[in-house]
Length: 152
Image: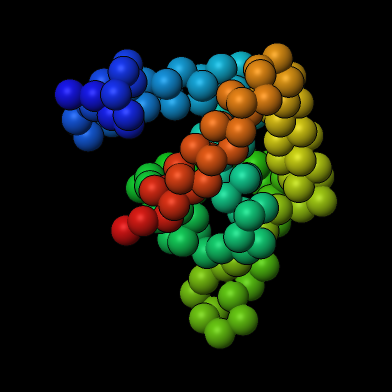
């Protein structure tokens, strides 16, 4: 079956086939973007937690564990390592004395920003190598992917 007008060579693919193709491409792109990171002593888990804190501003350890989809003991180890490097600070919870609030320090925010800039620069270079039509297609696809990512 063809899509579009007569003579169109585009084949319809099932949602399952498209999902597999997209998942593979997104996974490979994500791995490649990770390799574009500046050399750092932080693990991927530490950088991910620091990024979550930078995006949220501040979280409790439980909220961070939920955001990272890990168990609280993993967050405890990750936060301890980040705190030891001066990248995360703890402050008392304003209403619950049993909890703390975690937030990135200025140095932690700078690491996240540097990492983001390096990955954006690598991707911008790859996009600059594409045709205007391909970049326009990716602009539209990015909007669709954003909608999919936000869906429940």
